[in-house]
Length: 312
Image (tube, rainbow, N blue to C red):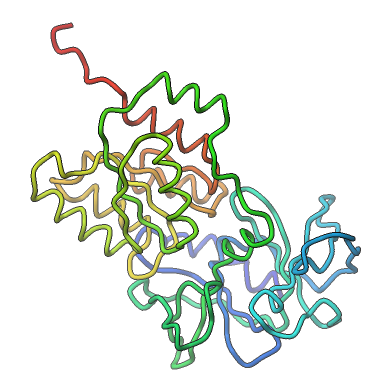
C-alpha cells in the first residue's frame, strides 16, 4: 500500500518550481484530514514495536529500528491535541526526513496523494482552532485539509541552536559587514524569529515577509526606491502558502530589476531532489534548517565585506 502511494514521487518533481505541491493525506483518529509535503516522506509502514525511552519528551512515543537506524517516533496525534496513538496497534509509521534528520510519526489513517496549487494554500484563521502546528489550509474536493507544520512540532521537542558558535563569531568579526539588508521569507513565526536573531548577530537588517507572494511584492516595492532602501540578499523558505520558495526564486530570476539578487533557499526539505531543484531555479545556495553557522558562512560568502577594487 505504502509503495503504491509513493512510487510516483519521481513524476511529482515536475510540479516543483511551478508553485504546485504534492501532499500525502492522512488522519489522526478523527475525521479531519491533514497533509504533509510528499517530498518529506521517505516511507510509510505498519506501526512497528516501539521501545520506551525513559525521560523522553512527552510527545515521543518511543523509538524503533528503521533500516538499521534507531529513530525517534513522535505521536503526531498527541502533538496536535488529539487522543494519543502510541497504544493504537492499527496506527501507521510515517518516516520523514527534515533538515537531513530522520524521524517517524504515528498517524492513524493513511489516505492518498493529492496535488494542489500554491495559491490555494492560505494561513489558517485562528477561529479554526488548529493552533501554531498547522501553517496552511486548503480544500481538496470541498474537504478542508490542514497542512501540519512539522518544523514547529520538532522544535517543541528539540529546539535547534540559535546562536553562532564561538568559531563562527570570530570569523564573522573578521569580516565586518557594511550596512546590509536581507529579505527573509518564511511562513513560520519561529523561523523568522531565529533568522532575525542570527542576522542581528551579523549586524544585518531584516525585511520580513510571511510567504513568497508577499516577498515578491516587497522586492518590487524596494526595487522602485533608492538603492539604499533595497536588499542585497533573499533568504527564503521553500514550503510557503500562496507562492513557494522555488517559484519565488524563478520569479526573481525572470525579473530584470531583481535577477542579480543573491538567493539562499533555507528549508527543512532535503535530499537529492531538492538539490536538483535549487540548481533548476538558479538559487545561489541551499542551507538546511536550522544551521546558524552554515547560513552565516553563506552570507559571508555571498555578501563580501568590501567592494572590488576597480583600480586594481
